[in-house]
Image (tube, rainbow, N blue to C red; front, side, top):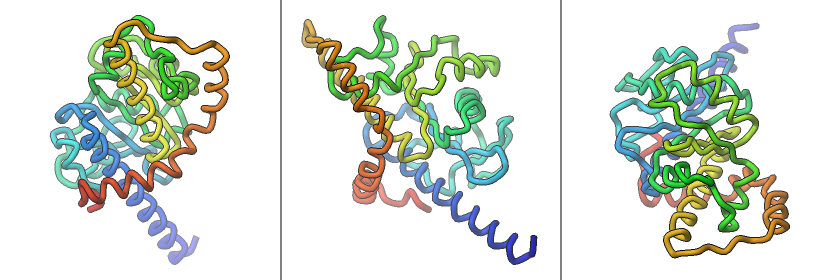
Length: 253
């Protein structure tokens, strides 16, 4: 490999990483904008392009609306900080959950985990997510469950978490929250939006009294129609960026 070729490849990877950094910082800002954040807790992460097993996660201590592309922390598969733009602390529980998915699923370019109230409420419901809305029915075929084992500090839990996630893109962490995984930040956030909206609708519907269930045929038809759900990111992400640029600019620095 010539010096010129190596320099070009390095520059290409640098630009690719900055794109991921900008998208992930935007996702943090969007979570805050939608009111899904939990002070400095919970995490969104993304794999860094390149041969190393590195990924980006929030510095432990910043609020989500403060996150910028340059403030994200780059860590390796052992949770060791590789690069930081300021705060270099990483929440150990965040590393446990996110490293499990990134290492266990090659297709998981991004992982998002929230403690938003409606998501936690549905995760604690005996029957989990119910087909009470079109939004929920679009999620059901993508959804898995993982039982609560305590604050995620035990690295042994990673094997069980990835086993329970399987090949799904959405998960309810029982008594804990929600998790989504996708090929990139836009797709993963789109899954997150649908799952959170389904949970919000369920909490409201069940607070109104007895609910109406659709037919099994309708549930199955919607499941079949949901197979391309992640592709909605091609429309949703540019629209979300326009929203964010008007409400919370500055994430891409």
